Length: 204
Image 1 (cartoon, rainbow, N blue to C red):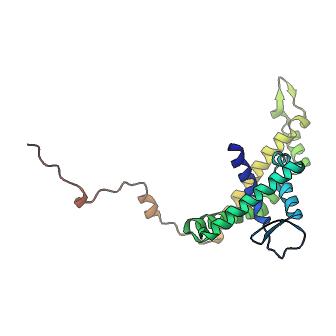
Image 2 (cartoon, rainbow, N blue to C red):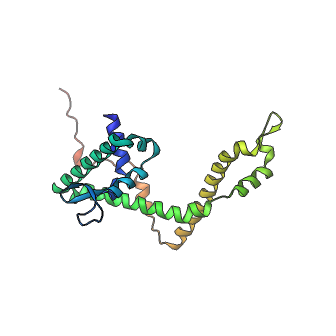
Image 3 (spheres, one colour):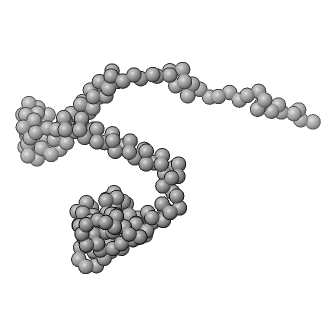
């Protein structure tokens, strides 16, 4: 059962592109109520999976297993739409939240990650200027042994620096209205209304 859910999660990220309409070009492998899965779709699905999952779908049995999983997902998807769950308020809220996160991720990739990339020369220059910090028992650690670790650390620092600067510029260009009174009230406990407080009757 655990393996099944791992598989569903792995396929969930790439399944969106596999279901095509009947008029799709190319020989179909399976059709579910007119929705086709082609050989090209199957190839894309496998390529999009992480390496450990790709091995699960090698050979004739593996391909048959993958097709079966895609059929299951398409059946469940169509059944969910049939029941109107795609119009459910909770579902639409999750879709909106997901879209927001995807847009933010795309923005960060464009504005932060690309601008925070470091070359091998940048990493080596930092190493050369700070060799004293990379000494163990009086010996300097070779650059090749710590290059990857150093690159990750410097990249993270650069990304934070670029991110902080980018957000500060956004704050200056957007109108932000902070309701300090309402925020301050969040930490205060509401006192019960008088009518809600029942007086204890004196014990006889």
